[in-house]
Figure 1: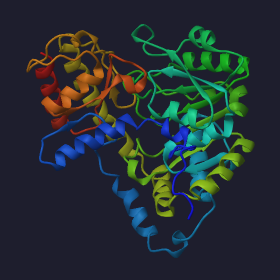
Figure 2: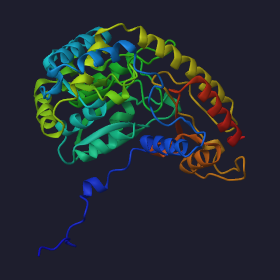
Figure 3: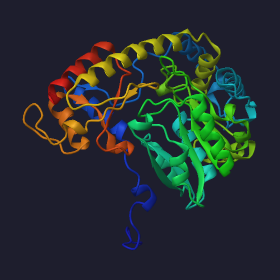
Length: 405
């Protein structure tokens, strides 16, 4: 009989064993488990709009579901109609002209991140990652064999990476710059001038740029979204743009994203996807076509609600003793500095020495779910999403203020 195990080999591969659980999804799962157990929890954890998907998008899916053509495999790169809609939308919204053949439809923007780094990186290649960063970026880079190099930012630059900081982190192994504006988790938005300056530096350095534009429609006040390859055309042959319908159209569960890039990189990504997942669910793709080509009033309405919640969250957080917070400029997150409340007794007598401990106490004692900054490469901070109902937002902030008082 063959042996059932071999001590020479670990049960789990080293690369998979090294992956950290998504902190944002883990917090959301814990909060939902407490709710299921009968607890009243306010969740600031997940980056997920609380709105239902707009009715005209759902109607397109309902119409598509009975059609036999949507019950079959389609090209791994996505439906031709959706790839064309993405190309048209990209030109309209960011001024970046691309062909439909440069678009790959992915299972959410998260798969586009994985596809991009898998297509670009060989073992040892370095990627500059401005920190704080979304939790998935380093994991995707490492899975592709790359090395993530954090470029620290803080309140002094509005959480924006400067060219000087990027240059200082650059080595002869640096291949890619990751650029994200609006930012998850900080809410920072680069000006057009800042975006162009970083882009020109990357072009002069001969770097690739992976730019995540998933929050492009969620900018507030006088701030405006700008797309790097549109501002720096000489970068277009070395740029991958990541986007999707999840955030702007309240479609996180539909799992439709995309990557846009040069044709050789797109071909490689399609080959990878053909073996990994094949095509995105066709009904979801039909819904995404309706989202991109239909009435955009829903985007404006949701942005207005997020803006109202943003201002309320900033106001309340800024008034809490020991809490410092920059006003979010985009996305739907606040990223307060909680260093002033660490090491002193909280309501109830417990003391947190890190934001990881503080997040645990907040969930256990106040029944408020936040994500500790350690997950984003920023100990001492926390991310709070304001993509939740106004009443829940106010209640959650009241509980947090009571805990920190």
